[in-house]
Figure: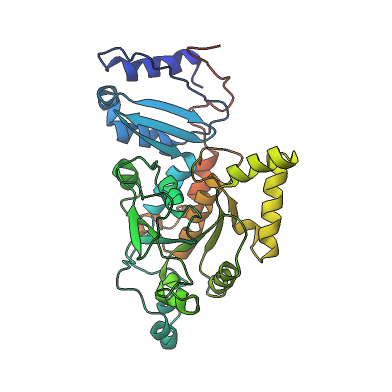
Length: 353
């Protein structure tokens, strides 16, 4: 187990290479109940390319309830334990075969004809569709899943009036892309029910049966069109994630207006979605603007996506040899490990009471 002295020594090693005084910066390490895995250690090492690059770049890291925020110079990315597991699991997937639910995997010529693969979709990588109404927070969710903020140069555009008119892919960037061997794409798709994307043919036109999963992003009441789309995806056995966004606003408003605690509000939201036919295990209550909040389901969403794609696609041969554990088994084992032994450490405080 690493003691306080070892932790402070590590922090000092990282910061000592700056060569200049960082005026006005107070660094807080919150390590209570942080479940660090070998994946995180590998990420820190590969991102910094050793202590020298970390010192040169000026790395500051905050770990809090499974989230790590790492700053490089003027930039900053938020890395969750779930995100690291998700990306590392993708690197083990064989992209040569489509998802098991894809029409051409069913050996039904009529299905292949009726649901062709979109010309713009490359199925040799792993693809997730992000769909939802304007204002639901699709772009913010895509940024959160990529460990980016809206201010980052490669972030998806956010803001009032931003409407998706054509499919647009987003890849992971930098060292996060390296973790997944650049195998992942998140697609911002136009919403259903418009002239160009009618609800009646949306599953076919958007090619949703060829995606590894569909994130149905909702905010506020669940609409009839969303209920129909969810039922279609379930019938076609496409993994679907009902992502109820902006629950941080809902919990705060309900607390102020009705005196309800956050858990009561979350239970109400979950119950309402279940009344529309949403499977309890496929409902994820999140705040895309604040993915680090541990009361919500952002981490669970990432783990579920990783588990699903492991079952829908084959492992690469080097990960599928006899006697080796499956991808989903490895994810579970990694999640249980605490190689640094930090789970029971008290919280050290710096620069304040």
